[in-house]
Image 1: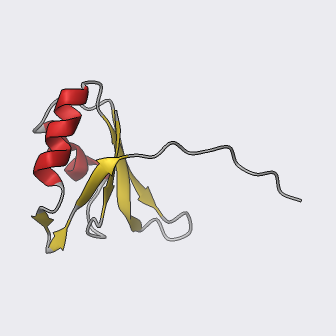
Image 2: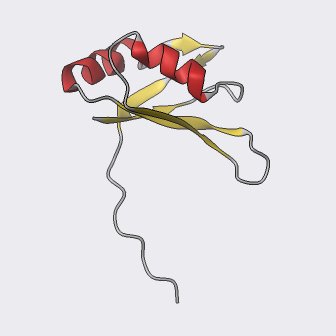
Length: 87
């Protein structure tokens, strides 16, 4: 299951997000999204967890939890639809 983790502190990096999520189970991939120009965190990231029960436990425990003074938003990531063609 792929999870969206939002409202992250600008200082949160991949390793810190992985540490937070791995407390609930195995993570396959962790990525904090960064600005391509500045390299600074955009305040959200994605985590893939192979076990749905562990992913649901992480969502239940972390959604609304305050980390670095910010209440996290954790939910199942929505599928990215097809990208429209540019004209």
